[in-house]
Length: 240
Image 1 (cartoon, rainbow, N blue to C red):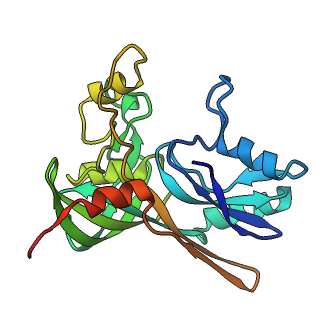
Image 2: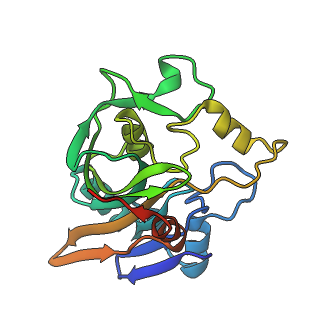
């Protein structure tokens, strides 16, 4: 599945990134990434990713066109003027709503961890706030209760939503790092280990993006992609 341009503006692009795409190269192995795809579409332009998504996360992200706009959007990002919301399927039944206000840092800086990128709540480190609302809870035969939540991160820490929801006891469905033993992720990335059946990607989707640009109010929203909608659609409704 290829990316899609949801909105094309003289100063920016809003793109729908499919799950499985890296947004930019992480190693010199020739992997074709989202920024490579964008540069193929706009070969004579300077393009800069204003927002980024993990490889397995799908959905909306913002791209600046030109260096001046990249600087402008960078400052807007720092002032928290670009608002993003996500949809996630999580284990269990979280509270109806709330704010997770817990500092995050890379776990390996504070205690041994076999996963370099793993983040964790560590007192006295980097502030992180995640607002959420539980939309509905259903039951999936394989996992028991799962919930559809809308999540609005107020800060932009690495893996913030995934680490915060693990901390409160409702990890994201099919997350290979959070809410699992380290071996799940290590075996998944080990080329010599056979993973059958292949584990689905984590259930996180960037669904809303809004900001004010000049006199324009920019708003885009997309629903659950096909793979997550299929999981949610196979769930049985839970009677309250």
